[in-house]
Length: 601
Figure 1 (cartoon, one colour):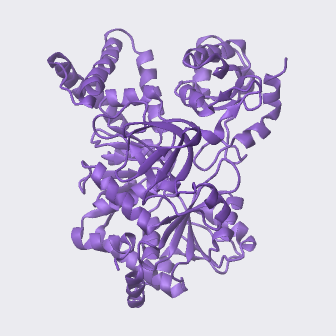
Figure 2 (cartoon, rainbow, N blue to C red):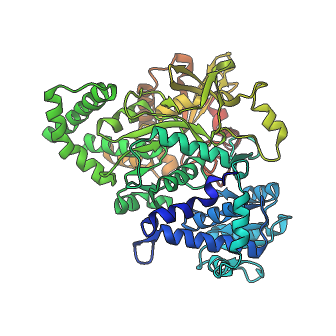
Figure 3 (cartoon, one colour):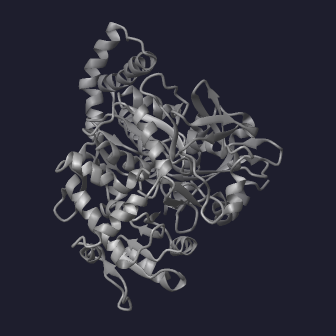
């Protein structure tokens, strides 16, 4: 019987790569990046695996990790895999109620926590978690509660396994590991209802590695990947496992807000991101062009025009651009494009996987025009991430790419995308009814997404569960409108309202800084943000911009009224999931008065 790929991965790679760097993490006191070699990763993982035996972790037992991105994630994950145990990730921003639900549902005894927030949250719910026995704290700077008599720090945990006296037990457990073992339970943050624990087995990860190696032929052990998205998210988790499988160095961005700084320090060749990252880059460039005048502005606009012709009209479809375009492109490559990439920190870029939400066509065209290989993709937690992604050439703007090798896709009722293959989950933990509901009688997984296939290229149209039906009987796809409007430089967040209503309306969180600048430039006086957002000139500004952006939609799909909000949607008020998706029921409840007002005659 073969070992599960993840139970022995870091040790096999250490034999191959030795002192080559596997991970880096930032020391915030010295502003330096600390390297971790493959040998060090293997050695620390062995200590963690031994320590797990010492504290009494059983085979096939669930344990939790409640932390921001840190190198300790990898030691715990792979130490657990060596013992045939199941690490369950929590979002670093999870509330006490969310953490409590997962701990009790998964019967977790040992919970690893990152910094003070995670420790305080976990300790605060300790008495409400019937199975929880011990917290193990990653950050030594965490101050323990005076009543806490059971928690230990991670260095104390590792010290328990330092003598490697349980190596034989670990080796024996690893030898029994197989692809049939459960690897992770990933709890979806859920825009409706309670979270569901998606079960991912080692067979799912083995397959995702195999098919990505077939598709991503330019990736190698010479690449450097920036770990930016939370390791709780299947996109980043599966990607990091794949990076380790490929021998690719991973640099861990611990604090999400620091990415603009850390990306310039590392200058990675690879980085997973969500469309919002590229939307901000696009907005920044547009602002720069708007502020520029004369020859410089003309040159920037021409660079975008030439880049589109060179990269999208020709290279994308395997054609050679005309000589005049090639010459111009080479000039801009060394000037405009080079400066942009260096400013972001991606001048060494190989490719940049992007998923998690729809990518607006304008963003996709812009990014590829300036020579950045953004690899748009589509996947779910239940499919161990990637179902489809852009190939290197021949990709279609507006699609989510070509279906991955050996994943079966077909279109079912309501144009729903159905999946089959070795990457698809076996179901939801402790939820047989919900599991049965997401599979057809002949075993196809129902994604809840509508779309269509053109050959092997997959297109998404809407999220079936999120379709709104107006009181006039018309169906509205809120995501389509939200995706289109989110590219506007004045709009930060937007929630479409339409279900059982006479017409479409919207709640809009503006980019406050841009609105303040607009007020200064137009001599608008105001007392506070709420007062400013009610100013007729500001409302007219948004009305005009929304009108321009929604022209492609049918009249019944267009926003007729909107309300500008003086504070953003938040996780604390239950309006956003941990992955920053809008919880529509919570928004409808919290803003009921503002919504009702938009529908007054």
